[in-house]
Image 1 (cartoon, rainbow, N blue to C red):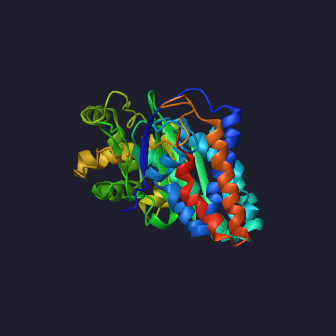
Image 2 (tube, rainbow, N blue to C red):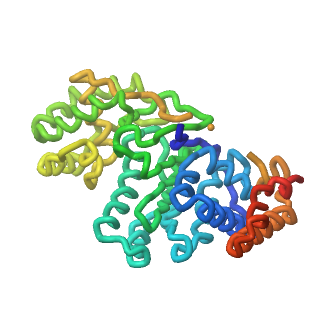
Image 3 (tube, rainbow, N blue to C red):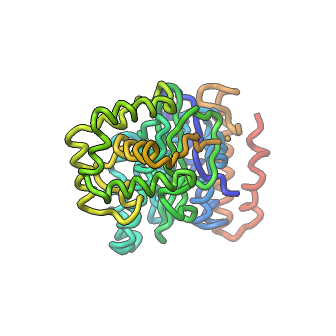
Length: 365
């Protein structure tokens, strides 16, 4: 089974020191080159989309197994290490403001990868839609702040993005080959060490009726929809919602402003063909998505899923000194072994190349 999905991590402060990050870049680049040489670009995407492998990869690079910084720093190291012209792979996006440049970075790579306009638009759509779904359709209380979009010259892609609440970070993994629908079970498999008590998961197959009715409510017209949002009904719906939503997840679903109601009106005018188109519409955020879901439930008994869709290695030590400090000499030996193996592969020296498979012998402390 492909274990693509979600992983939870406790929040850790601080950052990787420069001496360690520089080594991470070299080691990440070496491992990436070996993977692409041995298995190809698509296998590299499959590996990083798998939470178990990504977590082990981060530990090989020098992170504690449960550190929230694994996501941002490892993706940052990959972005520096991977030359699109050399590998046919582009790492776009990142943390905070950098994530907002994802679409521009996709466009900037169009000429280099000789991608058509339609292929570029598909990549941009995939980037935007994956973020919308994890922020709006999986309402688990984690606000996205990191979005990394990796794609190949053939238009295949993977998303590694992370959200945060008061105590934990949650990482979401997507793989293009595994996404049959953006709004139904897009995370093929899920792993985590923390499960929230109550999460509105509109991507669950159990939420299909809710998605269908939400779409019908929009198509039916704003006047019919607004009657369900009047104060009398609003109070009942709030009380209903509070039976399900935990304290950390404020009930704002029915508190729609005039501006937000205008968004619903525009959605009606557009008449989206399916739920995915509805979610993609500009301005269709979590409050409006939740309002439609709760109205669908209380009136038509569609009963959306309230189950959290979530499920969970050391080589060089951890940046925080746990279980032991990073051993620089051992780390440098690993990098040198990779460099020798890569150079040997280029010279068709298979004995030197297969030295990579004996890396564990150099990683004992």
